[in-house]
Length: 363
Ligand SMILES: [Zn+2]
Image 1 (cartoon, rainbow, N blue to C red):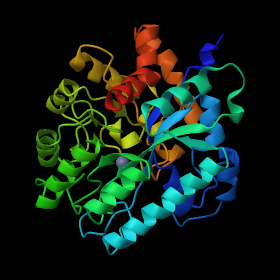
Image 2: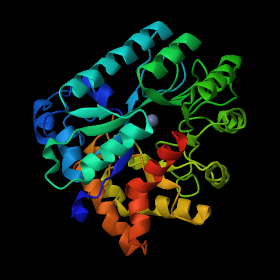
Image 3: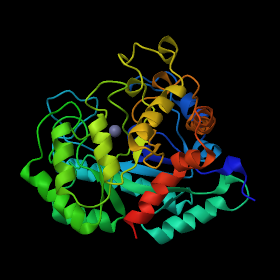
């Protein structure tokens, strides 16, 4: 008998290696310890407020996730993210991140999932009775922003290393595509990248693409598309969010959209470093509005999942007040039930939709 509290949660967006290497967080340690170690540090925003570590994921049943490689080149446009002077430096950064995941695999902390067989094996591991404390966290490797891909050969090499999904853009203008807060279509290299991704069997992550690039990418790319972490523009207006038309187009492509827990994507008018979860009255319930909006447009509960982004350079100061660590995402189950969602739809949100997506993509 697998206890209901063991019901798996799939988180489609975590920047684990970035936290390990750029924030110097040993993610094998409890969140309380990570916070303690960061007291008095001011080199990054949100020091001491982290919500994610591997033991905490196990405690909440988040046994499988999409984990990123992330590095970008610098640009003069607005960006909250550090950028490298050249793509070669960004490539080296992502290779360092890949080496950290490798070390986690060797330590038995994580297990990399690259195909349907590996996925099934991992699901059975987590479905077996017994405590989750010793189970490895499964991860599908994704690249957030493709600036680090130096050439088509590097794309092939990345696939061989187990990379399975790519979001061509991040913040601002990138090497291949325009991302959040930028405008304009794909350049020639961007169009080539998408064709190569198609040929190799990558998943396209539509998250962070600006509107022009979003529509162009959907036209050019014929393979599986998901959006790892993105909310609804109708509820909280910003170009970083999906319009209803975009949601419709994604649903038509069989996509799953992961909803994110970054406060400003849930609260209109949120000011970073000023608005607090308390002053905004922000609770997890607000995310259910976005989940429900996607379900209403889709006409079913088959196209939405979680893409928490909880370690995306923010912490407790920018998440719902009824969330202390990532383990609390499990509370969404109850909240969805209260909103009238049936157990099968709750399970579809928690893991079923993304898992079915991967099964189809890797058939
Ligand atoms: Zn992101």
